Length: 260
Image (cartoon, rainbow, N blue to C red):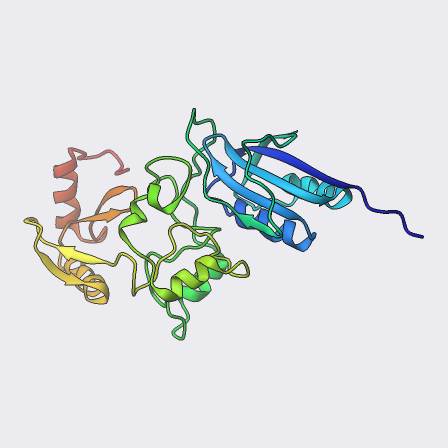
């Protein structure tokens, strides 16, 4: 007769760079695959997990939390304890719970992440709904540090709170099988920010693809443009255009120094 599995119920604190890197979706997928119940949430100290089930599977989860974490995650400490009366109870399944209360912030804010291969393929695919969408992102790439206003890392705590997700984006956000499951900056051409070209007075001259096309024409004509990204501004001109480069150097007071 097989031995009855030992059941355990533990609280696990994960510290380090574990917000904004797809860590909660990773924990959700791993715990669900192992048949465990419980929850994972962000809070001021990092990520908090309550997990219950077969002790062997809980041990496998703890191993994965460090050694199978998303590439951008940096786990600096893993602490285990017993759940207390104030901790949310365990449900029938594993879930991503709402972020916990504030407190002293000790978790690290992740940097902006370079475009991943999956998003690059979507960006260049004419059949994809995000074809040529400049603000494409997922749990593995996109802006983080530049749009986070406060922790824990949730969409209402970022500059993306002004953009309500469309039904298609919301379905991705809610789908555990999607790589945009709980991707806080999730957006598309329908519901997200878009490109616009303005003059010095702030008047809009062109938007979306027309803004990109007109920008190219202006650069070819020797103009100097300020390009606003999620993290600041860049001055841009055609480096092969002598008069434009001279004008940019004069404005930056860099007659001979390299332009940073």
